[in-house]
Structures are given as structure tokens and as C-alpha cells.
Image (cartoon, rainbow, N blue to C red; front, side, top):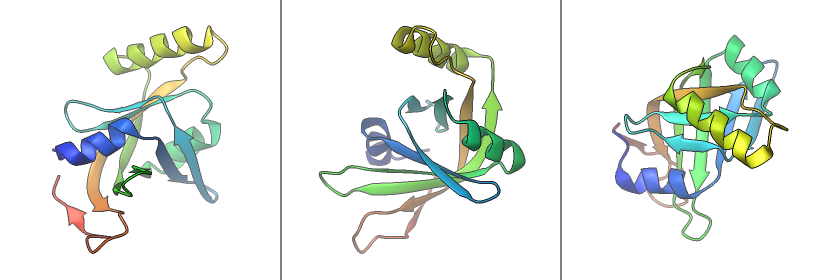
Amino acid sequence: MIPENVRKVFTDNLWFLATCGDGPNVVPVGFKCVTDDGKFAVGALLLETTLENIKANSRVAIAAANPLTAEAYQVKGTAELVTEGPVYEHYANLAEETYRGAHPVRCVVIVTPEKLIVASPNDDNKRELPL
């Protein structure tokens, strides 16, 4: 499970989602959450390159940092694209409320974490935490 302090950093801050296709790609994402079962969900609106990369290579990384404390973490895992179910419906409704149809959700990227790594600039940097 994701430790509560790590969950807070991901919940309270912007994420950066990294993928690799023909080359590396990283994008900030704001429609996101850590699910109750410890997965990471991203509502995909304008992520064309990201989605194409995931279709070709499901390995991804997500990073988040608290800019005031420099507490930072990276998750590495496997992504799947979901187009139905409660998480999809949540982001579809949120996109509709926020953008009034201008940017509908394409899918939800669900990341199953395989590694959780400290990215803070301190003695724990690069330390892998248990999931």
C-alpha cells in the first residue's frame, strides 16, 4: 500500500507522467488520484502522445513533489487504458463539468505501481520504499 505521507504528496501536488515511444515524453497531469487500492489514475483529455506511447509500451513513471518542503517521490509501473467503470465515469463527469464538452475524457490511465522511489534531495534519495 502507498504510505500516507506519500499519498499526501501525490494528492496535493501536480503529477508528471512519463512515457516512452519513439522518444521520451513527459506531461503534467491535473485530473488524477491515488485510488483506495493503491493504484494511480489519470483522466486523459489531451494526452495524444502519452496514450500512443502507452499503447506501444505500457511502462510508465509518475513523479510528484511538494514545492515547499521538497518531499518528492517517483512511481514506476505498468499502465492500462480504461474506458468504462466508476473511475472513468468520475473523470468523464469532471471533464464535462470543467470544460463543458470542449475537452472530453478519452480514457483513464490506471497505473499499477511496481516501484516507489524517494526523489527528495536528502539522504534517502533513490531509496526504494515498500509498496
